[in-house]
Image (tube, rainbow, N blue to C red; front, top):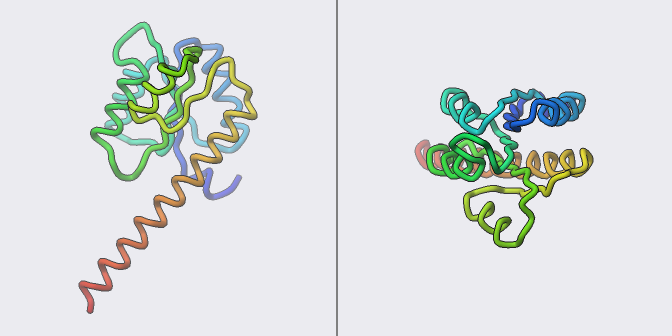
Length: 149
């Protein structure tokens, strides 16, 4: 397992236990640290105490908040470190996808999804997080240089 994967916590919210276990197994076998939740609300409660770098959530739940509200909460309250948000949904109309992206979702995967597709999107998320972290580190060094100089 690469150090990059070891350092990345993934939170997964899927209402159906079987589906949740299946996605968890794929991610754990790929070497990720995964915590699972049966609702977006459960995930949000834990996220507020211990944010994750990647969140994967279904769009619709039988309880509040739904996946879009979860994404909005993350974007509103946790700007840094950046959290990469992936939405899983059977809702595949252009307007529904646009609504997801407008809510702050980084990636929108149509269900049923292929495990390879999810792995690929998580790897994209890791590259994005590494890039953002490198920008943050560069800004910190630049600020330190100005203070010292």
